[in-house]
Image 1 (cartoon, rainbow, N blue to C red):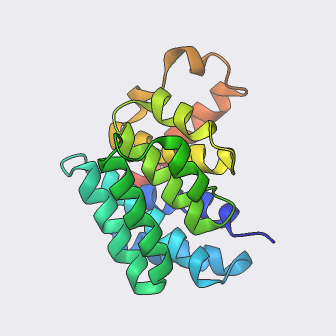
Image 2: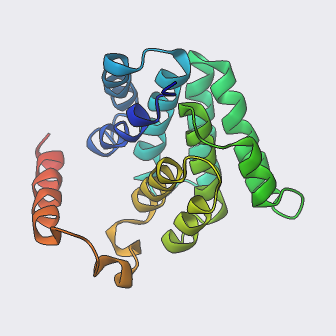
Length: 192
């Protein structure tokens, strides 16, 4: 069974595009989810992720406030998603009590709301360190690519392009094409 992780990974551009209007970001992420994943857990995860990205673009708020905004949004659509996000926040705030191996046994990420919670956990553990957040995400026995994508998107939105590890950038395929697309997207965001 497909748990909607694909729809969640498609949601973050709406948070980037509509960072000044998180409600609009959530609305469009909901629409894109319903095309392939109309279950409440997928929709709630998409809306929450888009809102988290939009708030992360405003680096004047704390990572915990970003998490809180995501939890609040999920509560509207699917309380079980909000509960998992709340657990991720609690786990991240108590790393001495909740080792990441224990956390990832509960948040394997095979469903949209689990992947979002696990990605949020990684972001909250290392909000200023892209390499450590993604490295933590990929050690899970679960859906590590989805979790790493979510964690990386949150850290990147919070810190900007400069947080990308230079040694990782060397290995990006089609780097010039991607940089051109980023420039076009940034220009579009400023105009709209």
